[in-house]
Length: 247
Image (cartoon, rainbow, N blue to C red):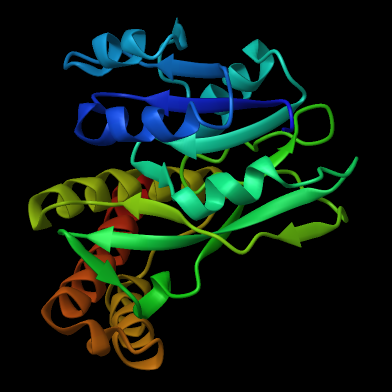
């Protein structure tokens, strides 16, 4: 089996962490957990699975993940979040995968929201590069929706899924959307972007139309409508906050 290190960043992640760790232990003995001050059972759960635990003040998603990569024993990194569970089929695929120097590996996602699978909307056909060599690529430092500095590297698509147990309530989604909106506004402000009445009101409507109609979020019923509506609110909050920063 390939020599992989698994890197996970956490903050009050007890909800799914045990299930996450049970599965990653099947593909690696080197599990790096970077925690930013959890007050729940996160650390006690991690200790049960012989993870290497590092406590680090929050400096952003990319910075936390790069720090975790630096602590790993192996060059090949499997990067997952604390609510992402490797499917049994993906575990078998990873065990038999021949990793090739310089290539990156993209993994498809099955998204669960409020306890149900979401098959449409913006989350449909979602996949991300999560398996890579730390000596070749690193995470950027964007405040939200961090990405890898991929360049022109070849990306290999794996077949089997990560199960992403996203927000399990409307309240949790609203809280996360508010947080992302603030970070997004601060990023735009640093780039010299301006808010406007058109952006504050037209952009959220367009975002809802894209998610609910064009990407067929309506096929996910009530939850599809809820996701599209909260995404539109996040867009509105982002430009509202940017407007305050511009003043």
